[in-house]
Image (spheres, rainbow, N blue to C red):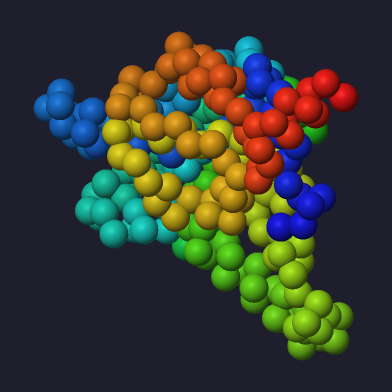
Length: 254
Protein backbone atom coordinates (compact mmCIF):
# COMPACT_ATOMS: atom_id res chain seq x y z
CA UNK A 1 0.00 0.00 0.00
CA UNK A 2 1.47 3.34 -1.01
CA UNK A 3 1.66 6.36 1.29
CA UNK A 4 -1.40 7.79 -0.47
CA UNK A 5 -3.49 4.77 0.57
CA UNK A 6 -2.46 4.81 4.25
CA UNK A 7 -5.16 6.48 6.36
CA UNK A 8 -4.22 9.59 8.30
CA UNK A 9 -3.55 9.02 12.00
CA UNK A 10 -6.61 9.53 14.16
CA UNK A 11 -6.54 12.40 16.63
CA UNK A 12 -8.86 10.49 18.97
CA UNK A 13 -12.57 10.86 19.46
CA UNK A 14 -13.36 10.59 15.78
CA UNK A 15 -15.87 7.88 14.81
CA UNK A 16 -14.86 5.32 12.17
CA UNK A 17 -15.80 6.18 8.61
CA UNK A 18 -16.10 2.51 7.66
CA UNK A 19 -17.14 -0.31 9.98
CA UNK A 20 -16.95 -3.99 9.02
CA UNK A 21 -18.78 -6.66 11.02
CA UNK A 22 -18.42 -10.43 11.20
CA UNK A 23 -21.92 -11.36 12.37
CA UNK A 24 -21.16 -14.53 14.32
CA UNK A 25 -23.18 -16.53 16.82
CA UNK A 26 -26.59 -16.93 15.20
CA UNK A 27 -26.51 -20.73 15.45
CA UNK A 28 -25.34 -20.76 19.06
CA UNK A 29 -27.98 -18.15 19.97
CA UNK A 30 -30.67 -20.42 18.51
CA UNK A 31 -29.25 -23.58 20.10
CA UNK A 32 -29.23 -21.88 23.51
CA UNK A 33 -32.97 -21.33 23.07
CA UNK A 34 -33.68 -24.80 21.65
CA UNK A 35 -34.63 -23.25 18.31
CA UNK A 36 -33.68 -24.29 14.76
CA UNK A 37 -30.57 -22.64 13.32
CA UNK A 38 -32.62 -20.55 10.88
CA UNK A 39 -34.36 -18.83 13.81
CA UNK A 40 -30.98 -17.43 14.82
CA UNK A 41 -30.36 -16.10 11.34
CA UNK A 42 -33.78 -14.43 11.28
CA UNK A 43 -33.05 -12.80 14.64
CA UNK A 44 -29.73 -11.67 13.18
CA UNK A 45 -31.54 -9.72 10.45
CA UNK A 46 -33.45 -7.84 13.15
CA UNK A 47 -30.20 -7.08 14.97
CA UNK A 48 -28.72 -5.58 11.82
CA UNK A 49 -31.44 -2.94 11.77
CA UNK A 50 -30.39 -1.65 15.19
CA UNK A 51 -26.73 -1.67 14.23
CA UNK A 52 -27.50 0.35 11.09
CA UNK A 53 -29.30 2.92 13.25
CA UNK A 54 -26.28 3.08 15.57
CA UNK A 55 -23.93 3.63 12.65
CA UNK A 56 -26.04 6.44 11.25
CA UNK A 57 -26.22 8.12 14.68
CA UNK A 58 -22.42 7.98 14.99
CA UNK A 59 -21.79 9.39 11.52
CA UNK A 60 -20.41 6.18 10.01
CA UNK A 61 -20.35 6.43 6.21
CA UNK A 62 -19.91 2.76 5.24
CA UNK A 63 -21.02 -0.48 6.90
CA UNK A 64 -19.85 -3.81 5.49
CA UNK A 65 -21.30 -7.01 6.96
CA UNK A 66 -20.19 -10.60 6.42
CA UNK A 67 -23.46 -12.40 5.69
CA UNK A 68 -22.35 -15.59 3.95
CA UNK A 69 -18.79 -16.72 3.38
CA UNK A 70 -17.54 -18.89 0.55
CA UNK A 71 -16.94 -21.57 3.20
CA UNK A 72 -20.54 -21.50 4.45
CA UNK A 73 -21.65 -23.75 1.57
CA UNK A 74 -20.21 -26.58 3.69
CA UNK A 75 -22.99 -26.17 6.25
CA UNK A 76 -25.95 -28.60 6.31
CA UNK A 77 -27.92 -28.40 3.05
CA UNK A 78 -31.16 -27.55 4.84
CA UNK A 79 -29.53 -24.59 6.61
CA UNK A 80 -27.98 -23.33 3.36
CA UNK A 81 -31.35 -23.50 1.56
CA UNK A 82 -32.92 -21.64 4.45
CA UNK A 83 -30.24 -18.96 4.32
CA UNK A 84 -30.75 -18.44 0.60
CA UNK A 85 -34.50 -18.09 1.15
CA UNK A 86 -33.92 -15.67 4.03
CA UNK A 87 -31.58 -13.64 1.81
CA UNK A 88 -34.26 -13.49 -0.89
CA UNK A 89 -36.96 -12.43 1.57
CA UNK A 90 -34.70 -9.82 3.17
CA UNK A 91 -33.95 -8.29 -0.21
CA UNK A 92 -37.66 -8.08 -1.03
CA UNK A 93 -38.71 -6.70 2.36
CA UNK A 94 -35.82 -4.41 3.20
CA UNK A 95 -34.99 -2.75 -0.14
CA UNK A 96 -37.86 -0.25 0.09
CA UNK A 97 -36.92 0.53 3.71
CA UNK A 98 -33.32 1.14 2.69
CA UNK A 99 -34.51 3.51 -0.02
CA UNK A 100 -36.77 5.36 2.43
CA UNK A 101 -33.84 5.79 4.85
CA UNK A 102 -31.42 6.87 2.09
CA UNK A 103 -29.21 3.78 2.48
CA UNK A 104 -27.41 2.40 -0.55
CA UNK A 105 -27.09 -1.39 -0.82
CA UNK A 106 -24.27 -3.21 -2.53
CA UNK A 107 -23.58 -6.94 -2.50
CA UNK A 108 -19.95 -8.07 -2.85
CA UNK A 109 -18.75 -11.58 -3.55
CA UNK A 110 -19.00 -14.24 -6.24
CA UNK A 111 -22.66 -14.20 -7.32
CA UNK A 112 -22.28 -16.97 -9.90
CA UNK A 113 -23.25 -19.70 -7.44
CA UNK A 114 -26.53 -18.03 -6.55
CA UNK A 115 -29.71 -18.87 -8.46
CA UNK A 116 -30.60 -16.62 -11.38
CA UNK A 117 -33.66 -15.45 -9.44
CA UNK A 118 -31.56 -14.40 -6.45
CA UNK A 119 -29.05 -12.65 -8.71
CA UNK A 120 -31.89 -10.66 -10.31
CA UNK A 121 -33.25 -9.66 -6.90
CA UNK A 122 -29.79 -8.48 -5.81
CA UNK A 123 -29.46 -6.37 -8.96
CA UNK A 124 -32.95 -4.93 -8.47
CA UNK A 125 -32.26 -3.91 -4.85
CA UNK A 126 -28.91 -2.37 -5.80
CA UNK A 127 -30.50 -0.41 -8.66
CA UNK A 128 -33.33 0.82 -6.42
CA UNK A 129 -30.92 2.29 -3.84
CA UNK A 130 -28.12 3.37 -6.20
CA UNK A 131 -28.56 7.11 -5.57
CA UNK A 132 -28.86 6.87 -1.76
CA UNK A 133 -26.11 8.60 0.21
CA UNK A 134 -26.81 8.58 3.96
CA UNK A 135 -25.02 5.27 4.50
CA UNK A 136 -23.53 2.67 2.19
CA UNK A 137 -24.39 -0.87 3.29
CA UNK A 138 -22.21 -3.57 1.74
CA UNK A 139 -23.33 -7.17 2.21
CA UNK A 140 -20.60 -9.76 1.63
CA UNK A 141 -22.30 -12.90 0.31
CA UNK A 142 -20.40 -15.90 -1.08
CA UNK A 143 -17.38 -13.78 -0.32
CA UNK A 144 -13.88 -14.76 0.80
CA UNK A 145 -10.81 -12.58 1.23
CA UNK A 146 -8.61 -15.06 -0.64
CA UNK A 147 -11.12 -15.13 -3.51
CA UNK A 148 -11.07 -11.33 -3.55
CA UNK A 149 -7.27 -11.18 -3.89
CA UNK A 150 -7.25 -14.00 -6.47
CA UNK A 151 -9.82 -12.29 -8.69
CA UNK A 152 -7.80 -9.07 -8.49
CA UNK A 153 -4.68 -11.02 -9.53
CA UNK A 154 -6.57 -12.57 -12.48
CA UNK A 155 -7.62 -9.16 -13.75
CA UNK A 156 -4.06 -7.84 -13.46
CA UNK A 157 -2.75 -10.94 -15.27
CA UNK A 158 -5.26 -10.36 -18.07
CA UNK A 159 -4.12 -6.73 -18.37
CA UNK A 160 -0.56 -8.02 -18.78
CA UNK A 161 -1.70 -10.45 -21.49
CA UNK A 162 -3.54 -7.59 -23.22
CA UNK A 163 -0.39 -5.44 -23.16
CA UNK A 164 -1.86 -2.80 -20.85
CA UNK A 165 0.58 -3.57 -18.05
CA UNK A 166 3.91 -5.29 -17.49
CA UNK A 167 4.59 -7.53 -14.47
CA UNK A 168 7.18 -5.16 -13.05
CA UNK A 169 4.58 -2.38 -12.99
CA UNK A 170 2.34 -4.32 -10.62
CA UNK A 171 2.51 -2.93 -7.09
CA UNK A 172 0.22 -2.67 -4.08
CA UNK A 173 -1.68 0.22 -5.66
CA UNK A 174 -2.48 -1.92 -8.71
CA UNK A 175 -3.89 -4.70 -6.54
CA UNK A 176 -5.70 -2.13 -4.40
CA UNK A 177 -7.52 -0.76 -7.44
CA UNK A 178 -8.84 -4.22 -8.40
CA UNK A 179 -9.96 -5.36 -4.96
CA UNK A 180 -13.59 -5.20 -3.74
CA UNK A 181 -14.61 -1.83 -2.27
CA UNK A 182 -11.61 -0.14 -3.90
CA UNK A 183 -13.50 3.14 -4.27
CA UNK A 184 -14.43 3.36 -0.58
CA UNK A 185 -12.44 4.30 2.53
CA UNK A 186 -10.74 1.27 4.06
CA UNK A 187 -12.43 -0.27 7.12
CA UNK A 188 -11.37 1.59 10.25
CA UNK A 189 -13.01 -0.87 12.62
CA UNK A 190 -13.85 -4.57 12.37
CA UNK A 191 -16.27 -5.97 14.93
CA UNK A 192 -16.67 -9.70 15.46
CA UNK A 193 -19.44 -11.00 17.69
CA UNK A 194 -19.84 -14.45 19.23
CA UNK A 195 -16.63 -14.55 21.25
CA UNK A 196 -14.31 -15.84 18.50
CA UNK A 197 -11.11 -13.89 17.83
CA UNK A 198 -10.23 -14.27 14.17
CA UNK A 199 -11.18 -12.60 10.89
CA UNK A 200 -12.14 -15.81 9.04
CA UNK A 201 -11.10 -14.86 5.51
CA UNK A 202 -12.99 -11.54 5.56
CA UNK A 203 -11.55 -8.48 3.75
CA UNK A 204 -7.98 -9.72 4.22
CA UNK A 205 -6.42 -7.08 1.98
CA UNK A 206 -8.61 -4.26 3.22
CA UNK A 207 -7.86 -4.96 6.91
CA UNK A 208 -4.19 -3.93 6.72
CA UNK A 209 -4.74 -1.01 9.14
CA UNK A 210 -8.09 -1.95 10.65
CA UNK A 211 -8.74 -1.86 14.42
CA UNK A 212 -10.24 -5.10 15.73
CA UNK A 213 -13.01 -5.32 18.33
CA UNK A 214 -14.29 -8.63 19.69
CA UNK A 215 -17.58 -9.03 21.53
CA UNK A 216 -18.77 -12.07 23.48
CA UNK A 217 -22.37 -11.25 22.55
CA UNK A 218 -23.98 -13.48 19.95
CA UNK A 219 -24.96 -11.50 16.88
CA UNK A 220 -28.75 -11.45 17.59
CA UNK A 221 -27.94 -9.82 20.97
CA UNK A 222 -25.62 -7.22 19.46
CA UNK A 223 -27.84 -4.20 18.86
CA UNK A 224 -27.79 -0.44 18.91
CA UNK A 225 -26.29 -0.07 22.40
CA UNK A 226 -23.56 -2.62 21.74
CA UNK A 227 -22.73 -0.76 18.53
CA UNK A 228 -22.37 2.46 20.49
CA UNK A 229 -19.98 0.76 22.92
CA UNK A 230 -17.83 -0.59 20.08
CA UNK A 231 -17.59 2.84 18.46
CA UNK A 232 -16.79 4.46 21.81
CA UNK A 233 -13.96 1.95 22.30
CA UNK A 234 -12.64 2.78 18.85
CA UNK A 235 -12.71 6.51 19.60
CA UNK A 236 -10.47 5.97 22.63
CA UNK A 237 -7.75 4.29 20.59
CA UNK A 238 -4.67 5.93 19.15
CA UNK A 239 -4.08 4.93 15.55
CA UNK A 240 -0.46 5.49 14.55
CA UNK A 241 -0.03 3.71 11.17
CA UNK A 242 3.67 3.12 11.77
CA UNK A 243 4.38 6.44 13.48
CA UNK A 244 5.19 7.01 17.15
CA UNK A 245 2.89 8.52 19.77
CA UNK A 246 5.18 11.52 19.89
CA UNK A 247 4.77 12.11 16.16
CA UNK A 248 1.01 11.89 16.50
CA UNK A 249 1.04 14.41 19.36
CA UNK A 250 3.21 16.76 17.30
CA UNK A 251 0.76 16.53 14.42
CA UNK A 252 -2.10 17.55 16.72
CA UNK A 253 -0.29 20.79 17.44
CA UNK A 254 0.24 21.64 13.77
